[in-house]
Picture 1 (cartoon, rainbow, N blue to C red):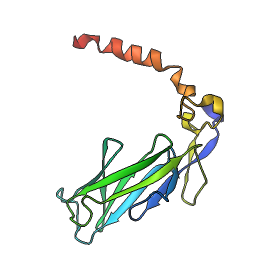
Picture 2 (cartoon, one colour; picture 1 turned 90 degrees about the vertical axis):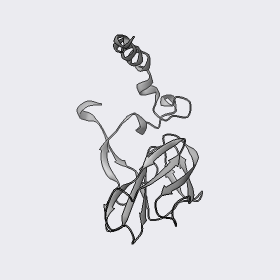
Picture 3 (cartoon, rainbow, N blue to C red; picture 1 turned 180 degrees about the vertical axis):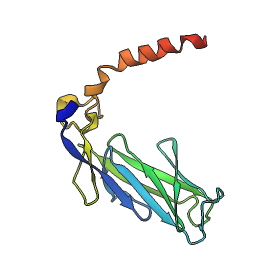
Picture 4 (cartoon, one colour; picture 1 turned 180 degrees about the horizontal axis):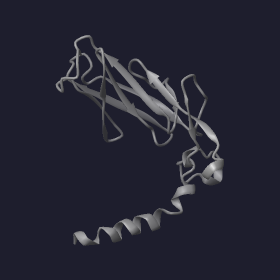
Length: 157
């Protein structure tokens, strides 16, 4: 969109525990969970936390002072479920969920950051590709991009 790009607010939702089906976030927003355990004194490499969501493993990271965070971006409107995997017994195997909705960006909240508008910011119905908001704006180059990539990999044969 060049120099005239509009500014939007980057949506993020921070939770200090598990979420459930009553928690709603905008699709394409950053969902961040903060888990605290006093036993976590430092990032020794042995304390780790990650979630399994949508067939993916999303690793957490240590913030210090016994706090680990995990961040995930839902890329469509859906009902999401996750399971925590962790070296701390009281968290390992615990589960949660949330609902993501379109259109992006949803309601602004304190702490949202200003960002340039991207394809996912487009709420016009003619920019949807199936359920993916704004995707038609970039999908027009998909075939050319993937063909170029495939041609570049020919040397592997």
